Length: 312
Image 1 (cartoon, rainbow, N blue to C red):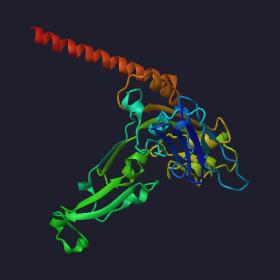
Image 2: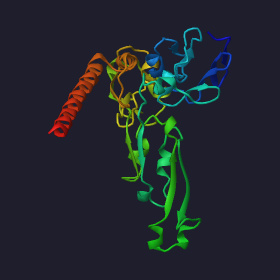
Image 3: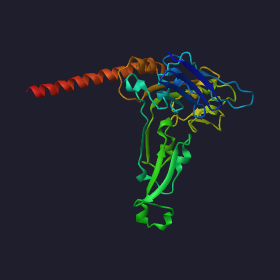
Image 4: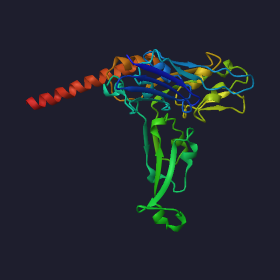
């Protein structure tokens, strides 16, 4: 048991601490990065995280939901850190970012599959940087033959083709919405969403003039207001299925969200199976278990052939 527990709720962050003899666990929620989505609350094995809809005055835009963590329930496992789509939660042990559930292989690492090929970059283009809804991309410098380039016009056309651009994406905070990929030149950025699913809005059930879901959506372009019917419509190409919209929707059956797949490292874990069930659905969970069983059978057959080949 900890010698001391601390909870501090500031305007920009929420901090929880366990202070022991030689260990100091600290869990920090960055309220600026937090989108007020459902994921951490659904993933928490101890049900220590609550997501509360914020009241709004008439005529005002909706506010993103407030995330709170119960210090009495939290055991600093780090599952919320791993699953947060926006990297808004960090767990540290004595100041180091340590996640024991990963080290013990009781929980998988979610895969943010982001590949960048700057050789395909137009030399004076920063469209990916401008398009990123979370400001996570930096296009920092151009070099030719290892030397900085300050004036492209000073290079010949053949030299320009060999100019290298430094493009950096803060992957730990990227929800893999794919906005940069689809806005950028073909082949420069390739992204696989780490959460897949389906989202739909039944406009006939939306309250008149309501745009709450659009107000809180962290991904610009995932939800759009139609000029024709003045209703909110979904662009699934950009949606990361975080559920921030679902939390604030005032009509329970107007917006449906179903996560069907989560991209992660291989794992055999009862803890993960339970989290997967809460984040997705029984059908999606069963599908993953069947895929694991099929892979096991393939591995057994492969090992059998190898063994028989050695014996012969």
